[in-house]
Image (tube, rainbow, N blue to C red; front, side):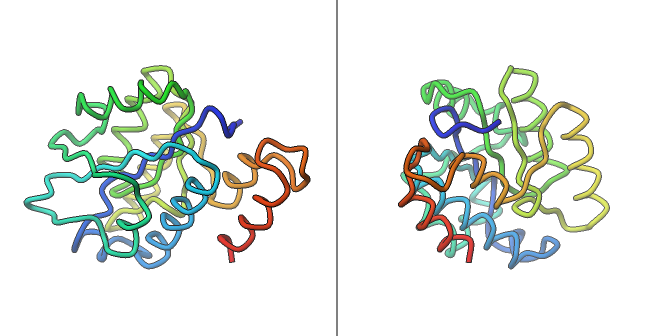
Length: 184
């Protein structure tokens, strides 16, 4: 289960032309934006990366303003292969990772597997993950699940973090109302 005080959002490589040519790109980018808004609302740490930014470009303009600070530039496909990423995640002192990104069968897959092997509780947001082909997306999600990652959805993750619509929950009733606005 995702817990509000133990979860970090990791956003992987939503960059340039590649982000525009993956399967269902508009929906995938919109889902990542919802996750970023929800994470900000719930005060979750957000770590974001860019794969070879000189070659692939910057994070898409819809998503970049919703992400705090600067992206972590990387050359390794797995985020875990970048020491700055591993240090930042460890510094959060959180053990659950909500994962979104492209491409499902390369960078997201390798990151999910490495995080699972490192003992993190990984939740991959299916509609916020894509590849250039449906086959690669499906294979990537399947392999991540087989490696121990939970496959989830935007709404499922958001409401799992909230835990309740009432004021007694970890986020309080007002956050529930704000979360509904993000989903719509």
